[in-house]
Amino acid sequence: MDIEGLQKRIKTTNDLRSIVSTMKSLSAVSIIQYDTALKSLVEYGRTINLGVVALMKNGDLQIPRDPQLKPEARRALAVVIGSDTGLVGKMNREVVQYAQDFLRQKGFTLDQVNFIAVGRQIIGQLMRGKQNVIEAYPVSNSVKAVSKTAASVLITADKYIHTHHVTHVYVFYSEKRGVSVSATETLLMPLGTEWMERLKKRGWPGRNLPTYTLPPEKIYSALLKERLLIELSTAITEALSAEHHMRLTTMQAAEKNIDENLEAMNLQYQQMRQENITTELLDVVNGAEAMRKKK
Image (cartoon, rainbow, N blue to C red; front, side):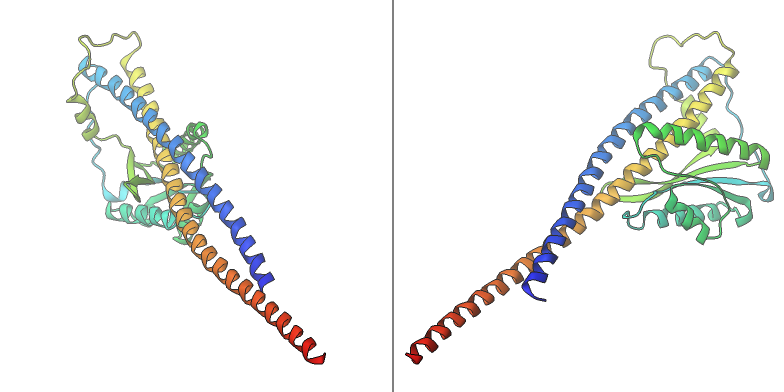
């Protein structure tokens, strides 16, 4: 490669570094936004739980028993959340693999499970695994759009649950754990006695329990709908935070690699430039010597 070609390559690499740096900054800002949203969702979830606690403390809500179903009667709907774009390492592949392994361990066969995909990258992963995808949604591109996506998924899930006798609904997504990202799951339906038992053991934060005029059944139904929305919104937000964490890590590695390449190319450029200067000086000296000999 000549020195002009090397100069063009250095310029192109510097342009690429600017793009990588911008993507890294955007991911860092997005992580802060989604983590802040998560704190609000957790706090709202606590409020919903307190509403259920109040109903139980007042004796207006009994803990339901988990239904006893034969293995062949069970049907599962799995909501798998990933990303729309790449540069997230193995995150999408791992969450799909985790979902498949988890459902298999729970005793579900391939024909007992249907999927809702959230994220364009997830669709391809599920299709390659020959899974039945009933609906697909893009990932929310902002904090404000998360609840809208969650609501759309819940509407689709509700229709499918009633028409296909679904007994279990799971949500699979990625979450940050320290400096890494891992796949995890949340059970949306049935609620199960374990969750209700935990709430029943909680104390009430005030002296008096709240009073209400609406029928307890209506209050519980409204609280349950809000809980489902919160659970799914939290999963989507966790997945978005994990996505940008993976992208930030990828961009940091790319930036380091680019800097190392730039350092090597700049060193090579300086060496080639010095060689050209030396060659030009030798040509001048040789020319002057030839002129002197002619005289």
